[in-house]
Amino acid sequence: MLKIEKRREPSQAMVYITPFIAIALTIICGFLLFAIMGKDPFRATSLIFFEPVTSLYNISELLVKASPLILIALGLSMGFRAGVWNIGAEGQFTIGAVTGSAVALAFYEMEGFYILPLMCLAGILGGMLWAAIPAFLRTKFNTNEILVSLMLVYVANLLLSVLVHGPLRDPDGMNFPESRLFSDSALLPLLMEDGRAHIGFLVALVFVGLALFIQERHMLGFQIKVTGQAARAAQYAGFSSKKMVWVSFMISGGLAGLAGTFEAAGPVGQLVPTLPAGYGFTAIIVAFLGRLNPIGIMLGGLLIAITYIGGETAQIALTLPSATTSVFQGMLLFFLLATDILINYRIKWFGFFKPVAKGK
Image (cartoon, rainbow, N blue to C red; front, side):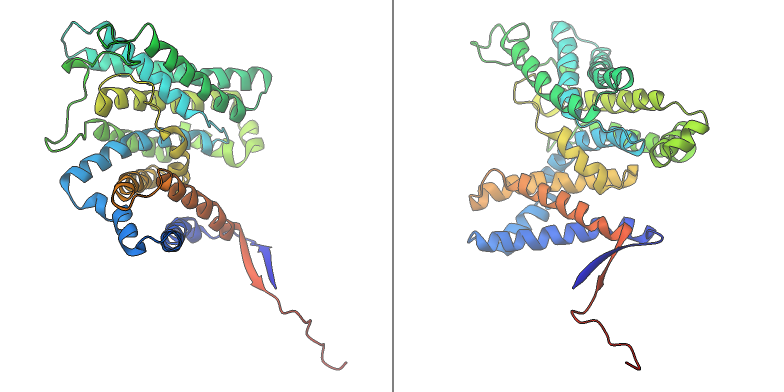
């Protein structure tokens, strides 16, 4: 029979191997799932994992999807390293889109290079303000930040709905719940003509480098690491746990809010009630798939973006359910968590019969 035995020393190599194992298992199970559904598994797998990189337009769409995932996951990784669990990045993403869009609409009849920076600043501050709520409740009343941040997602979505049905609704939009289309000064510049990829991806790469510097070379990164791995040692060293909670939430909330502004000012071009696309939740998968490392998060964001684009392509080509993408992302998270057991535990096989000792 099988027995799980704790390792004396966790394998560092397995930390980097298990994500590839999880990806392979996801592809295999997806292959079997398509076969059970009566679809061509080879074509379906090809459409999901290879089709998104076969044309310049698809690559452009890939960058559009990857940009918010990378930004949000970078912020979340800081908190996860410190043992602070911000699960409500989706709400901070939404509020960031609202505050950034409000600036765009306030300057609707004006043109200027300053409008877009103001939108980004408003988006960051909006995300930080929304993240400050669970941070305050955690440090002041010791509430569970997981539940508070998660519940605030629904509040943010309802607030968005109220605003696009009321104060921010387009007065010439025939009562449709959406804002005006942003002016040219409030739209992100495109990276290429054939597609919707915008400079938000380049900004995400800049934050990847900044996050790598903080984690590897800055005192803040060291404090975050020590607080997450040895809370008592951090306390003896004089590191404030409350400060780490605030820092983690402010970084993750700010980046999520910036991602929300980029989504509104980029591919959408206005504020709509369907703007929240689940990036805040999917970014959790990206963060762990990348092992909370900025470079890994960048690669993980691109991989998850492939499943977004490929899943949509497969839905159209093979008439698959709309939940196809979510199923693949869910399987990936499941296998990633399952294979993580291999880092701290080893699986041993024991026979059904005990061996007989010699001489008896």
